[in-house]
Image 1 (cartoon, rainbow, N blue to C red):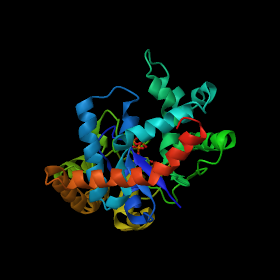
Image 2 (tube, protein in one colour):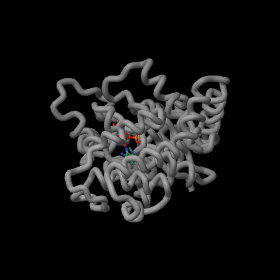
Image 3 (cartoon, rainbow, N blue to C red):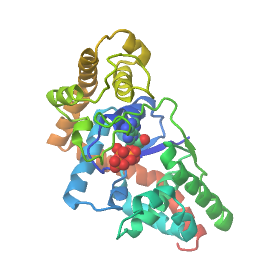
Length: 321
Ligand code: AQP
């Protein structure tokens, strides 16, 4: 059974991406699973080419440094011909009404004067990612589940119209997904595209930067260290971060700490200990030696080999071989 997950290089990898996704990929990866940098998805709104190229490499390096197996990773644009060929087949399987109904399209296009067509069609590109690689399970948060549903619909429709080409995938909610919140706006999740970087801990942040950001984390005026996410979201976020980094529960962390100052210190120590080795290895990979490029091209070759017959069969069934 193949599970497929991706990360979009819309910014540098942060603690939320790491604890909520990438660290799990490293720990739980099965022999057939695939993890990719979805750089084509980063083009649906304004992007800078040089920045996108840099962030694509950055995401790949951090994934490898975090322990995601090298033979399970690839970069989406390294298989651009394959992904685009299947995207076209699926765009000709999807209706305009289906694409327009996607909630994320409505949210992201709302109020904008000019909207890239890719923002409308990107769920079809996501369906092609899933179907090209034969994924049976796609771990996603609630915000992406509608897109996996679309992939299911398109797989079923294509199979019914032309013949058996695709595994019908299903979305699965990760069991213990840590949801890391922004340090300065704890009501919101930590996000690559947030405008205030003070609320975001990046995986490659230096230890002093991590300490500074955590010292400035928003708490509340209750002066009470207990785990109450609804009443004390900032404190709960810090407790969850320590718990995730030290493999315990937020309540157990709260039991051993008396002041917000000590909580912030504990969070800084836990995060620095967790991210330190990943940061070091990622910086090594990014600095040179060609190791990262070798991993990248071997990953692309493997992913291409594994998807070749599936794509050829789909093209044949659709009558365009
Ligand atoms: N704050 C978070 N806590 C836990 N998990 C998170 N993820 C994202 N933010 C958090 C998980 O990281 C994986 C990769 O995310 P993505 O690149 O697909 O996009 P995203 O979810 O939209 O991430 P961001 O950081 O919020 O980016 P922008 O600002 O560009 O939208 C996913 O598994 C995601 O659940």
